Length: 418
Image 1 (cartoon, rainbow, N blue to C red):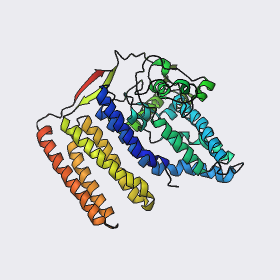
Image 2 (cartoon, rainbow, N blue to C red; image 1 turned 180 degrees about the vertical axis):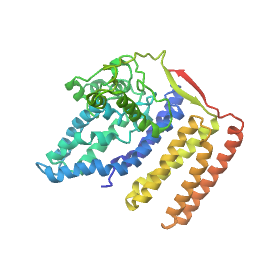
Image 3 (cartoon, rainbow, N blue to C red; image 1 turned 90 degrees about the vertical axis):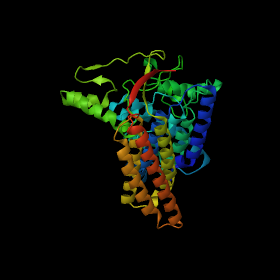
Image 4 (cartoon, one colour; image 1 turned 180 degrees about the horizontal axis):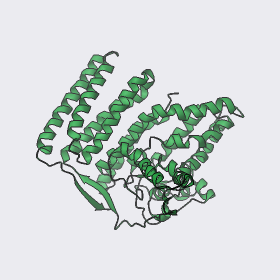
């Protein structure tokens, strides 16, 4: 099934981000950094692409259980949709909570928490693999007879709802704070302060946290991020970094029992020492964010390339069902190369220019080859070729004026949280 409710909301996501960025500039609140925001958005873009391949596992499992083991067949009526929405949110609560309390599952969710900012772009910073680990949690809905369409629709609405709560622009919301998930409640969830860790897991409703003892009211303004920052702008590495950490832990675990504890205990378990490492206390006055500096021209170039990436990825996601798996794989690989090199540019990697030249040639060539056979494909392919040529010229000018003059040497520094 190719239906994806999130696709319908993407234009509104970007419109809302544009408004928040304008308000941020107007109020001088400094909620956005370009390197962080592009990394967030690149993680979300690549997650949608990877989802094309992984949904064979996740939705396939749900459909198989529904087709073979459903106890009832729930019709599509007004009451069944409301019930499906509430039941999905309950399942989401447990899937989300397990993603924080089981180390292996945390590896599929940690990406969403890595940003040290809190704005609407963070909502789109999604993990590639979370759906694989949490898919079994939703199977009770399949057993009760809710079909895959109902799962996708209510799941999409649930995720769309959670977009707007990733903001610091909205304070408390009165009576809604008692039963709905709000920006205040979700800011707590993203905080790395010890008392905020593993709190407020609800999607749409906060009643589950109140009921199951994981609710925490927002007190001081949170410090955002994870307790062991990855210090990278590479969205692909963001998805694999915790797996490497788990691999290191498994090598240090002396017995099979210890290895199982590494996988299924909470994050922070040290199998070698047989203890949980304490959560370090932090304050906004002393905490230092990861940051890097690059010339402004590089920022403009990456922003331009990300715009082109969105314009290319959106129709791909819409019409990917008409492509073969080989074509899908080639496009996915090029999208992965693109977002990886955004990180290389932001980190000042000297090879980013050479890699980018190869990427531009590969993307332009594949784009022209795929577009020529379609109606009006000659004109669209010509536009793609023109944009590729413009990008190559721009890249060459950047390399001459910035790389060859050593202005792109990374200047890593840390800024106090504002």
